[in-house]
Image (tube, rainbow, N blue to C red; front, side):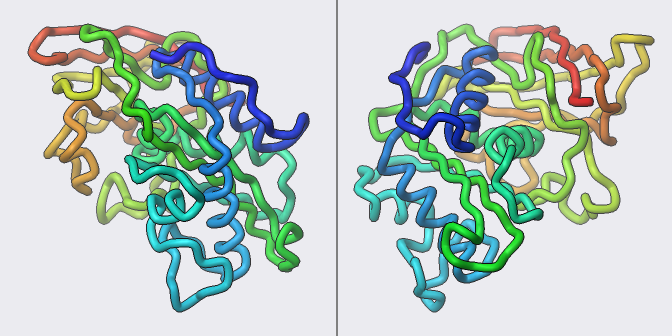
Length: 289
């Protein structure tokens, strides 16, 4: 695992630097390894954020029929356009809605971590990252949408956990966890309106890339009084309703049925197997106030 990376070139005080620091701090704290800045992925992230703002289309995919700022339909296309090698590439986007970039670096990372597939994207064993936080003012547009875009890549291969490692996010001691998971695309509970019936913030579990994870049980209690939290059934591999984990048998997740309480400590117990070997993980985290 990567434990140290070069100091990034993002401007001091910038939202990109704030996002980079928080993302790597959380990844390192929970054992996922650090990501190093890649200027080509920065370029790809900025170009797509600008395309969104110029064309007023909120999507992971660019439409060549909206050609202003077009650099490629898919995230990997845009990374290659920016000079990154053809390699696994991931993308996470979240949107502020008040027209200002202030605070959107850290806030965007927190929002992405609350999701299922977005959190998985931030935590996969990539090695490189590009970050962009843009507003309408950056492209002479009058829009309140502020994209925070994170692009990750693995041009040098994946980081590898120890064979017996089982890592989670959140993990022991994490604070500032979002209480709720609202809208996410794809919807982790197809058919459920997450706008009116949000879930709790997702818990992601991973083992070494190339190995197989099973999750047999997951429980959560409020630390203050032991009150149990209702959890949805753990998901791995082919059980993922959106097919997102079919090619990632080393990844799983579990979601609370309802939003958690703000400013509250919770204790989680997860059991399963890592390549057939049984494990149990117990950890506590605290939601944001």
